[in-house]
Amino acid sequence: GYVFEVNKTQRAGLSPPVPCRAMGRFRHEAVAVDPRTGIVYQTEDMEDGLLYRFVPDAPGRLQKGGRLEALCLRDRRAACVRNWADDPGPETKIGEKHATGWVPIENVESPNDDLRFQGHLEKGATQFARAEGIWYDEGIIYWACTTGGVKHYGQIWKYRPSPLEGQAGEEQSPGELQLLVESNDNRILQNADNLTVAPWGDLVVCEDSAQRDHLVGITPSGECYRLARNALNDSELTGSTFSSDGSTLFLNIQNPGITVAITGNWPA
Image (cartoon, rainbow, N blue to C red):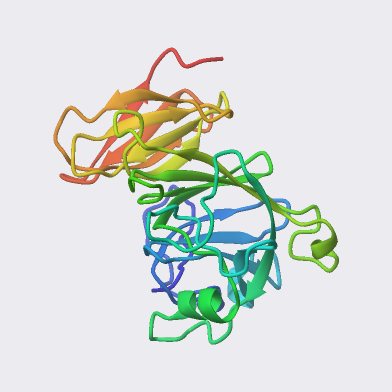
């Protein structure tokens, strides 16, 4: 599939269904935009997927085109950071930091669902386990990998862009990738999916497991705590986001398709 832009407005109406073709045709899950650069980071919901960035020719005007690239580790070509038992290469440790690079993706509209193979096998891009929710906050990009980790319970990744992100000279001051959380206990975190950053700085992560799902808070140091539970049914929680004044947390219960507004005595 493609990325489409939807107009932000209080008036009901349809947005023109014009695909942003230069952003690539693959199994998109979510995007995050760095307002400093206008670069769009994209997740791919595949167990052997990549993490992409789209560097627009005109920031904020995605239809004007740009270049599509995939993240790689500078010290490990074609790395696989899922940490599954049968994965090649060394295990990626929590807190480990890796300098990054970006490889170009060509034939971005390929109808064969093969951009991830081009990026990983041919170009050396890094492979993730079902990258889903992604969020930008205070110069950091966070994303969840739903089946990452030894027990496939999920990982949370943290990327700090280069000061020269997407520009000439970036390789002299590269971005930095860090594994923030990997769950090996489903009572702590099971199958992380959508996420947001709370006004007090913690991540708020939606679970998407085969059991009763929770909202899980994660501190900047990587400590996890349960924030809420879906007491209605076993459907996944999605789309966590706060109101602009930080007073209300909105989230969806995918089935039966309802939105819940949560207020409370949030931390200052």
